[in-house]
Amino acid sequence: GENVEQHPSTLSVQEGDSAVIKCTYSDSASNYFPWYKQELGKRPQLIIDIRSNVGEKKDQRIAVTLNKTAKHFSLHITETQPEDSAVYFCAASDSGAGSYQLTFGKGTKLSVIP
Amino acid sequence: DAGVIQSPRHEVTEMGQEVTLRCKPISGHDYLFWYRQTMMRGLELLIYFNNNVPIDDSGMPEDRFSAKMPNASFSTLKIQPSEPRDSAVYFCASSSGTGTEKLFFGSGTQLSVL
Image (tube, rainbow over all chains, first blue to last red; front, top):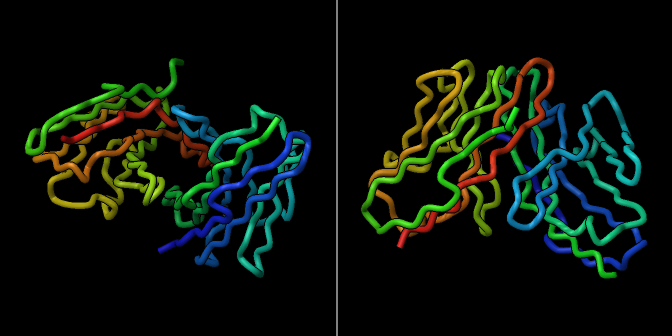
């Protein structure tokens, strides 16, 4: 089955700086890579996703890049703000198999210091 | 739509007792997932259903865990008998499965087994 590794487990940045979280996956058949944000005590919520036919996707201050050859993908947050503080989870799935089963990384706790 | 609804929000029980967690997915969503979240293991998929049929229960840790989906608007996750190591946050999530794998999570049930 799929295995997703996520680094770092914790990340502290100054407000205004950029943050980068990296994930690697093991199953070359995986073709869908979402990122979820979980604020303290809240539910995970999708913030951005990318499919394997695209190398990069942006949405305002967040962007995701994908390197299929190396089997890794990254989340980039620019101009960080205190409200970006949360746990971020990457995930991977092989939707082509029709399973819609996501395997999550263990999460990165991001702290944005004002 | 009110989103995915889980109950109870918090459950405290004693070891050996039966625990039943409940979930109402978003109307029209064909997929329902049960996840368990712990600090050590992150978000683990326990089981998921497609059109009320269990598709993959390989994540269910032991025979003490069982899940049902009697109709499109209701699912239960039961633990009998419960053990302290079952303490975790249990999330239910649903997705439409129609070309998008975006998961909508419920608020979760914080389970504490004493």
